[in-house]
Amino acid sequence: MACFFLFLSIFFFAISILIPASTPHITNPTNIDGFAVHLIHRDSYLSPVHNSSLTTADRIQSAVHRSFSRLNRIHSLSSPSLTRDISFDIVLDDGEYFMTFSIGTPPRQVYAIADTGSELTWVKCLPWKQSHEEAPHTFNPSNSSTYMKLPCFSPSCRDLNWYKRFCIKDYCYYKERYGDGLTTKGTLSTDKFSFEDDYKNTIDVGNLAFGCSDDASGPILGNETGIVGLSRRPLSLVSQLKYTNFAYCMVVPANKHWLGATSKMYFGSEADFLGGQAPLVTGSNNQYYHLTLQGISVGDEKLQIPSGIFDIAENGEGGFIIDSGTTYTLLRGEAYDALVKALSEAIHLPRKHYGEDLELCFEASFEDLALQPDITFHLNATDVILTKETTYEPVADGVWCLSILRSKSSLSILGNVQQRNYFVAYDISQGNEAVYFAPVNCSNPSF
Ligand SMILES: *[C@@H]1O[C@H](CO)[C@@H](O)[C@H](O)[C@H]1NC(C)=O
Ligand SMILES: *[C@@H]1O[C@H](CO)[C@@H](O)[C@H](O)[C@H]1NC(C)=O
Ligand SMILES: *[C@@H]1O[C@H](CO)[C@@H](O)[C@H](O)[C@H]1NC(C)=O
Ligand SMILES: *[C@@H]1O[C@H](CO)[C@@H](O)[C@H](O)[C@H]1NC(C)=O
Ligand SMILES: *[C@@H]1O[C@H](CO)[C@@H](O)[C@H](O)[C@H]1NC(C)=O
Image 1 (tube, rainbow, N blue to C red):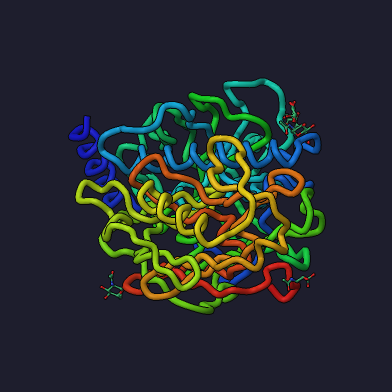
Image 2: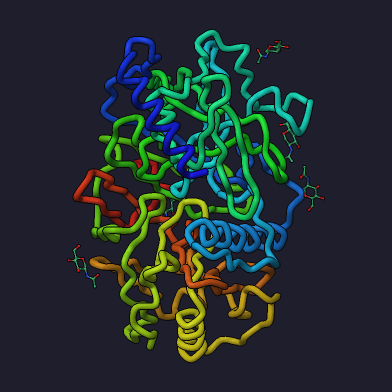
């Protein structure tokens, strides 16, 4: 099979050299130095999946579930042997922050999850095999006068990994795998993209390649309409826009409906490198953003953790990833145990049992917890100190739980809750790959 695809790629590569004129080239995106867009939290009333009848406990439970599901998905995709915990389904409704943008002529607004762990940007297209209803934000390619399918010999098709693409009648189809058996597939296409900035200006970025998805092998629930790929690979949104940097600033919600508070994502000149620098692990695959976590402290006390447990193993498993789509930080068992032990010893507040997954909870007020020692992640070469707002989550009246979870694999992930109130900027220029962390108030209008 591999040989066959390799042959096909060489074959189409050869053809495209021979007849370049017939390749519909994607025009370079317009020269815009940079721009910023809103990120909409899935629980925000602005979100397409907002459900106002969910209680705080429901929301936390589903966030815990999504975190485990996402861990499984990343773990199973980056490991040669599929040793995932089968008690958590891998569902496509993980991810946390929606971006909204418009595709086509006339422009059609869609919502898609901003995902630093994905390459291909794809949206749900009509006709959609699993449902015949017109969902609220589904893209109908036959309504767009600028829509085009991309042929197999197009450069964008070749940018897809060979195992993700196949040809039908000369057109490029993709199949994106999301963990065990769950896939989405469709036509690799191109159309006009535009974004709306903070001042409601339309930012036309020209034609981009994207996946027009017409099918998924598993449940795609609710109104999620796709994924925005933000990895370092060639087809991701940042790479196609020819930016070598992007950033985000995720707010701490002021109340359970996230009224008025939107987080933001920045591209190009808007994504300044502020604060401490943590170089990406070199030699890791460029699908995920791996960082070097050297240790964790509670107050001034460094946790006793076996050295090297956050490193990528020789078979590619494990490591420490920063991810936009995982809700709660997950630490592998040895580190999680040490963290819970250190916090239990340092914090003299009544403990409270709350469910299986949130292992450390207190009967306390936020003010009580605010006085307790900080948790610091020692990255190479910057410290990320968690704020109390992002360390504990109120699960019930007067009950706060540590919002860090036990990873059930060798992989550890810095989740987006713990990235709130940090301006997190990614430098993806070759040779300088790094993530910058600056503690800021993301609700402050200047961000
Ligand atoms: C909203 O949440 C409630 C409570 O969990 C659930 O019963 C209902 O199906 C949800 N609605 C939608 C549209 O998902
Ligand atoms: C797209 O076209 C179909 C008919 O092909 C029409 O029913 C539908 O209203 C159009 N949708 C939009 C958003 O224009
Ligand atoms: C999807 O969106 C529609 C219209 O905005 C809304 O009525 C419906 O409840 C949403 N479904 C879910 C599962 O959120
Ligand atoms: C920390 O990063 C520097 C610069 O990238 C690198 O030279 C060094 O080996 C790293 N140290 C560890 C322990 O990874
Ligand atoms: C952050 O900024 C918002 C808006 O300016 C303000 O309401 C809030 O109090 C600030 N938070 C902190 C911790 O300073």
